Image (cartoon, rainbow, N blue to C red; front, side):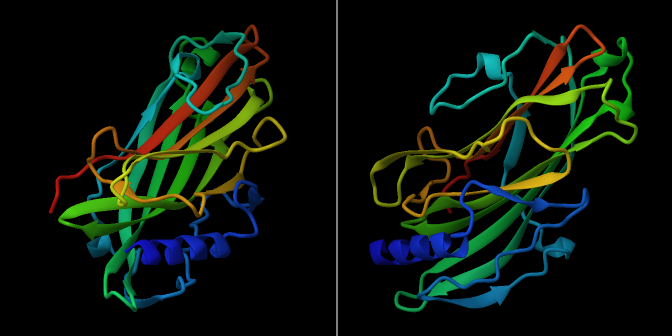
Length: 273
C-alpha cells in the first residue's frame, strides 16, 4: 500500500507539474472543466463514467458554507482582505452541488482499486445592502468551484485525498464599477487533515493563494494538492478535506463598504463500509 501511494502521488505531481498554485488561462463563464485523462504509473483504468449522465451522480456528502475571514482562525497564514466596513448582510444561494464518479483505477501490482470523483459547486452571493437594502441579481458575485479527489478503502475504512481544484468568480448581468470592484487578496487554502492511511495523524495544509492581489472576474485559477500528501480517513477524528477561498470586493459608491466573499467546501465524513 505504501508503494502504491508513492506511485500515485508522484503521478499527481507529474500531471500538474506546469502549475501547482498558479492561474490557469482565462475561461468563459459556463466552462466545464475536463476530467483528468492521464493514468498514474502502476495503475490501469478499469472503468470510465460519463459525468453528464445523471445515473453516475453519487452522494459524497460534499457541503459548502460561507465564512467571515475576520472570525476565522488563521491556521496556515491564510491571508484575508483588509476590511474597511463589512456589509451587514449577504444572501448566499448554492445553485449547484453535484458529485460524479468519473473513473476507477486498479493498482496493477496489488489489485487494489482507487475511485476518482468530481464535485461541481456554484454559489451566488447577493450583498443586497449595497443597493439600499433591496436584493438585486444584477449585483451578485458567482463563485464556481470544481474539486477533484479520490477515495480508496483499507480495512473497511474509506480514505480520501485531494487531487486538484479549479475556482472562478463571475459578476452579475449588469455589473458596473459603481457596484463594486475586486479589492484585497485572492486567497486559497487546501486542507487534508485526519487519521492517515498510514495510521499516523495528518495535518496537511497548503496555501494556494494567488499572487498579484485582487481577483479578475471570469478568470479561472487552479490549485493542486502536494504530491507528498497522505490520504486521510473519511469520517475520522477531526478529519477535514476540502478547499477554502476568499476574495474582497469594494463598493466605491456606498461609503467604501467591503464585502468579504469567503467560502469553504468540504467532504463530509461517511461511515465505514
